[in-house]
Image 1 (tube, rainbow, N blue to C red):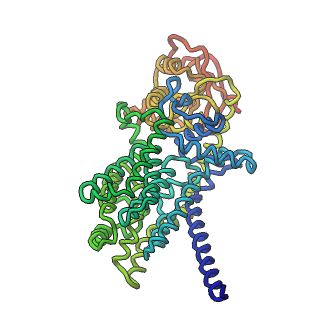
Image 2: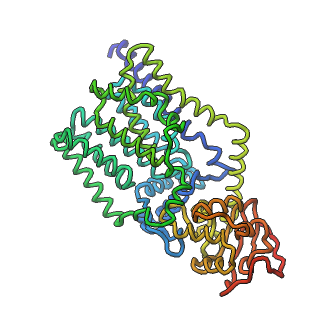
Image 3: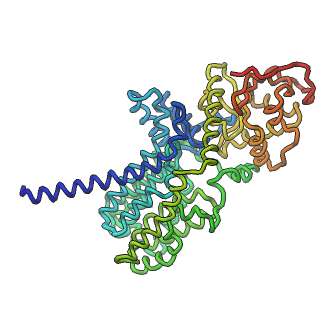
Length: 540
């Protein structure tokens, strides 16, 4: 081979390697920006309550290979729940944990912490490869938006083993395949798209189902041939094959979430389920400044056939759905991602394209500047939250060697309590656990020992763990839709341990966490405050 040609090839591969390395570094830097909240005092903590439920499932799978977790007996005790979560992410975490065993003493926790960034990295490499094959002039804007979009980072963040990370990866491949299929149908892309849609539907029958049905309806109305070409049929068979496998494995359907009368109150406490206003700056943190003029650019891109019009309509649909529920923001940002190169092609060439790129990236840079260097108040709040979780973990872990018995704890801390203690909990964090969530809220707001003892008896509670009473009271009142009673039990548990009902014995206190043991539940209790026994905290 001539030396000149060899040098050209070497230079090209060096540029490719540098491009991948820089993109990977940017992607992982944003996903791992919260490492101080995840790795604390040599232990691993997860960023939300649902993550601990997922990790309990993964632990069961790791301990019992081949198990499919169709019932959660560890939450909403004693009834348990039939969860909406499915097996694929459980097994990804368990397989990664098995591979990490030679390298760490806590392989399961480490696997749970890094699984989402790894999924984001794998999807990002695919996006890099796919965008090179598409030869779009705006591909670097697409890659930067994927690396920096606040909502996509949140969905794939360190310490967040949530199904959204797997959904984002699966739908990214599925949508990339759809763009190729609408340009030129091929069997390979049809199968890749079908498998990805099938995996997304296996993970969740909510957002992927709506997006897929919307896409099929749009194509059926205006371009039915795209659905029936021979190359496309392989994709449909691949999709059906994955769904058939999912049905064999899961053997259940998720329950409709709105049946519980307290569902609306619970949903109001979940950030992802709240509406997102038009003036919320989060839109710019998700998609960049170009979003402000995107309607015009999208219209021009579709008119010039730079973008399949079905993607513009799906983007509009996901935008409307995000207005109603912020959780749709993951998929709105993903769809916007694929439209960005076509939008930037409208303003080519020269300085206009550079200016449009800067407008796109500027809000993202501002967001990461504030996130990377928060003010002292934010730093103090995060440090306090980390300290509180460390103390809560110490108390919950102390129950791991105790005789089996249910724990009643504030619902947002219940999944972590179950994971660290190995004991079942009354509440949970999902809508399926609403009966237990409501029961725990009623217990903490109760003003009658009779009501409190009845709740403990019905749920077989042996231990009660309580957090800062103000937080417990406000969140419990939000679930029940009532005002906080002045003599709510949670305040007594927190501030006056000597005045609690006789069937609760304080075991100790660590920071805001207080642990009580349930004993000798009476048929009828005496009123609060009538005590003759000094039971001061003994500590841990």
